[in-house]
Figure 1 (cartoon, rainbow, N blue to C red):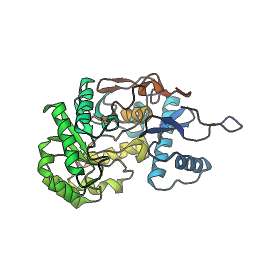
Figure 2: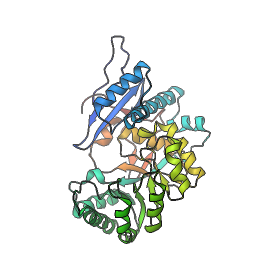
Figure 3: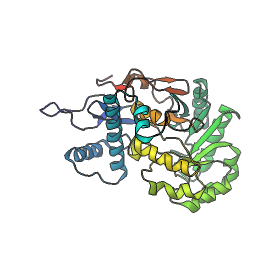
Figure 4: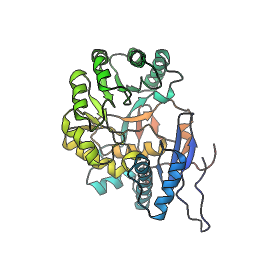
Length: 345
């Protein structure tokens, strides 16, 4: 990766720092002072434009890209402030939210979606076995991704069944529908989805589609999860009040940073809904998400990690990413505890 450019005074300009990962994935980072944030999942040119707007003092638009840039900047600002205070980010967040740090080691689940070499049952099963061998007991797959045509549901269910068989009946399988199926399509396959014994079924209906959530929840015997793009109470309250959502999944990138995630988590707790931050991200957002998760109830769901995407992931930061098996142990250094390397690999 390369550093952000500086102006003639040496001040770092808020430009995205690009880390190519795979054909599917590019991490976009941003530096604020000596704090770091991640604003992946939006086009680099759009990130540059919005960061320039932010630097000029202009208000960012309330769009997905605008919220993502806000999330990256707020994470970087929180990281810098925690470093200034000499505190790990979790402790800095605890001081500002009156919430205690409940753990220093955060359990992880393996999202194998971006590690699949092919969209086949065999490839999914093989990758799931690798995740289990690495120490994971919970595996997530998005089986309907990249499967065009009228047989998408049947082929996706074949992939899901292959993963279930690969990990065995005692481990947890999570399924992400990515809003690729309609509620009616899901209901037609309700029995097959129930037979998978899911830990949760994600992104079935929009959070504001209360009736859709209720129909899916009534027909399929599985907890429902969602909310990866949510940023405000108004966006999550319909689902929280519906009684049909079991797990809220705010993302530090898209929700507006760590403090915003914790505010949404507090709302979820008020409605008896668990929280598992959405995190198909690089080491920077993962570190921020782990520090946020340290303030969430220890009996809640694990935190997402992208499993097996590239073998050199942990070497893009210093010290190396603190992953051991299926756990993330917060580093004791101030801030997020890691710093991206600023030279090309």
